[in-house]
Length: 363
Image 1 (cartoon, one colour):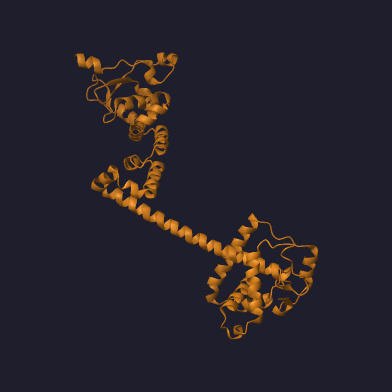
Image 2 (cartoon, rainbow, N blue to C red):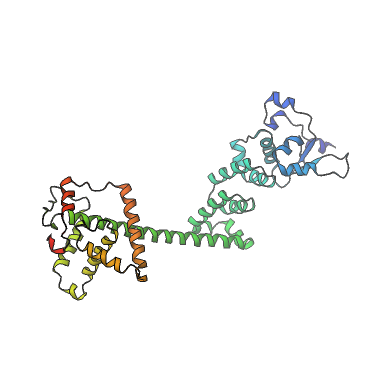
């Protein structure tokens, strides 16, 4: 009898997390929650049913005897965690201390009894308190409680610090008792590594397309305005000291390629790799250029006519893909950087000039 008196708790108004006036207006409790340690907490079935559909179903379940006392057991967690859970059901409030101390237990109860607001708050708190030592335990709980954000954060932490995690007791326990989750973790790490490699390849490819786009701008710049030592006969090349080119390293390489292309004797027989590269750059420009009649880049119009004649060839699919990628990279770079400003005189020269041969340039 004495033990029953000790375990039967007389609930204070503070348990419900309500103000005194509001707590006094509540009707008499008609239900008890049984916790670990045989603690019985009187509660109101109407309030619990309005917050948790699972508890509502348990409350509405028919009893064997109408006179029997209505009791819902919540066992397997500390009784103070149950008190914090019930306080949230009444007031939608939970202290930071309670979340820190009973976050794992509150997450489990919020999942079992379907209280999504509390579940979300517990997930955020557990994410902030993830460590190498507890990440495996929290990962298992996140999977069982269907907490995707918490699960993903745990997976990323395990993947990023796997050498340290595999030395913990939690990982040893996982290997012995949950090989399926271990396999999921290893698959996640493999997929993450594959994504990193794929992203790296895409970045390298995008960098190549940007360089080709830059080369096209420099090619047009050299053939229209001139740069240091290479340019059209009717335009004085710019002096580096006076007006340094913003992309001089690229322009300098193209100028060297121009000089070699103009004097190389092997290119006639197609045996020079540098000349082949120059042919490809000129062809790429012609594929992008939308003003071949007024363009001053060498062989632009000739390449354009040749491409129109060979338009139906299937082996040009990869080339067309390259052209689209370079055009896309050029559009992206043009949003980030302003185009070169051309003077009215240079535009007039461009419109009036129709000599497109390589011999029209000064080297």
